[in-house]
Image (tube, rainbow, N blue to C red; front, top):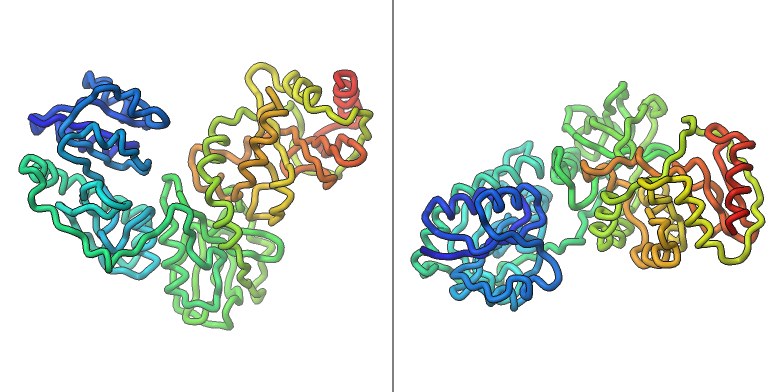
Length: 469
């Protein structure tokens, strides 16, 4: 019987772990941040730990034969790898060496591949460079999406894992050295070109781009494709090649839920369209005969990508301060504030009292957000906790801004739950989505939406803040 240390953060780790146990082997510990994997481990009486700093110390004197890294994107330090006396094995969702790195199924579709695959390899050398001892190939269909290809990879992983176990039982003696001269590597923060659809390309290539970034109802780790009509940004959910023609970018037809646009070769029917944050949209303002042009957004979104994970976690943890107000949008009104130079403590206390015990976050637009103004592409605020604005504001500034489509890319997020209270420093008025914004430019001002706050209520809130300051 062999003992394994299982590390993984998706259900694939659970199913492979169950197959390992069914083969008569043992699991010394399970390292995961996925609640279902943790629940399975605990139900089977297995020691369970969270990943993160100090993992080797928390594992203590644990010893095992093999470390199994399955659906795990965390780089493992040598101190953790050293727990396994015979070696460490990693599951990779692409055919090595050609598709090393992350999001391999996406890049395979983008590159027009007709086949993809999965690889089981030893963790040795550089990232995804270890010897291979199991690989499975799958066909890529003409209508393949990231979601469907990921599902094929999942099935191929489960189908091949018995071979992995057999290889490990034999000491992985059949492992093959990779030909690294054929290697390609795709980084976590790498983004495809043409995220804003360029209709001077062919309909077929644009449809492939949309499909490559279609993750179904699951979290999308990259970005969404989009079009711009006038001053409005629309995210594209589906794209279908249709037999029609016209000058590239010309809108050929529009109905309530879709529009057809001419490309360099063929036409593209776009549907499942949403706003940049994933909300419902009205296409009535897009006229037949109007021309859609591309805008360069890939560089901007690539610069924001390194902070994606930080803001995804922050938004999931956010408890927005909301007020019992009306809906809609009205004119901006202003009420000057009599405040001292440093009001962060007073603002935090004032907002906390408005939010009560459960709501703790406001919308903040500081220097980092104001430096990347791109309506429809960059969120005009970030969440900050009011518990200690002297700490949370600098932390927010350090992590910059995030792409507005993050709300549409993560089913756990809801842009409609934005805080009603905003704080900004640059004198630009109401933060979009907020009912009131404290604008602390040269003349501190409470800016409010007249459709949601009456002048009397705005004055009452202002006087309460002034009293605390």
